[in-house]
Length: 428
Image (cartoon, rainbow, N blue to C red):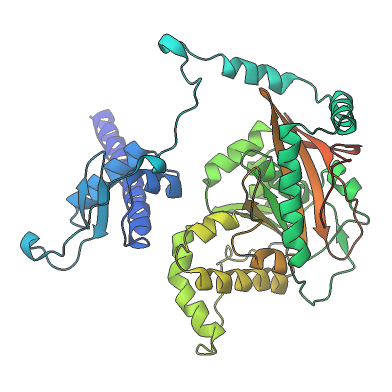
């Protein structure tokens, strides 16, 4: 009898957790829709939230069932808008249905699945490439040969374009007039520290820029792991991945996040970027002198004042401000000033294309930042080769060169003496 009651209780508890999870997903989807009154397709929602399309469809049906949303749902066309006070379908406002164009869809890779349904062996090749050693000498030899012959390989042209684009933006960017600390800190990644004389001035803000999969998140987790182990308070602010997934990343590299969390030196917290947009009106009022009380751009964990902060990412925050560029600029200025006031050394991740035409969302980020570290990921055949560059850093001298980098089982490994692409012309 007692066993049946316990089983029933456990079943109810599991059902409650599942409903709470579905409710959170529904609310997150609704947030996206409310921030985009012109309507979104399921692909758009999936892209902005990272939620699979099947989960989105389930969340939408749940919202409609709860009478929180009126939606026309088909696989080809989808238009959504929050349901107003009226419940009479005849008096409801007209809805413009926009057909999804082919250009909005991403095509699958040509070799995905292969012919006759056979699976491609690309995954096997990529597994082999991960185990292969980074052959810098062979790479340099090939580059110098191409340069002497007057030709440069396509992938090197990509890198040259990427570096030139970033250099041009930084060249035209102004610099904040503020005092830089004479106390220096290390990243804990030896190869990066070897590129910077003395170290990073404490209390500075650095942009960590690069394309998807270039090692930005791993490097930032590695930096926080180093400082948290040495008793300094560290905060990882995620606007994309869950804290569970980030802790799993750390464990995959042999680090122990749970021990640091229990010790009180590490906190990993997920924030909803759409919650930020709701508080921006107050920030704007303050910026215009209409609000006399202080409004912080983020709410830190109670009783926790971090010495090191990672924001992952500014790109995710910017996406929540679509169509509200001025609000985004005000918020970013408040965010930088907030970190400066609490004296935190901050690493702000920004996503770029592998060959970007712009460096940051608005251009205000590099104006406010004290430094920029760029992560490169260049594909050569079936192998990706990684490199890193300290492009800008105020308050200390640093080496201006692109050096080899690897993502190993123990984290990011940087080779400060193994310069790559050194003969390529640079800007800035």
